[in-house]
Amino acid sequence: MLRNRIAKGILTIALSFSLLSTATITILPQKVEAAYSLSTANAIISKGKTYWGRPYQYGASTRTTRVFDCSSFTKRLYAQKGIYLPRTSKDQAKQGYYVSKRNLKKGDLVFFSTSSSRGKIAHVAIYAGNGNILHTYKKGVGVTMSKLNSTFWKKHYKTARRVIR
Image 1: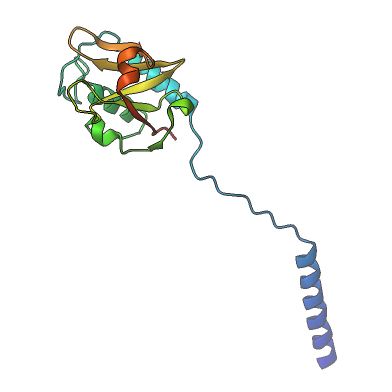
Image 2: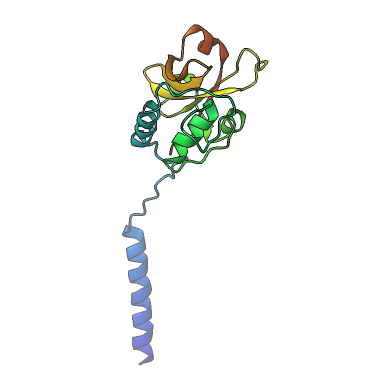
């Protein structure tokens, strides 16, 4: 009886080692960032375009769509897709992660200084693809599309952040 137990124990150990030595263990690398969602970016841009021409008003409330300033515009659009941004462009520039200008994707937030901001971030826009930015600025202009590399925006470009996951 003792011999049977010892034999079964040895057989169990041998079988375990056999299985361990033939088993393939696959370890997949973890992604550092979540997958970028083009559909989310397109939905944000599409919704933003529905406000085309909507008037600009500095300090506009985030609770209205009658008027926008640059950061109330981005805050509202991204919130509709479950991405909650702070109120100001300066604080929005601290969200997500850095993206170089040459690696911009639709939906990335693009930040600029203005003529009066002394080189500090004071404006935010949404990269809409093909070198275009969707944003609102200046009374009389409102929600519009501009070329990222036009003279003014190229000169005042500061950084970009990806907040869409």
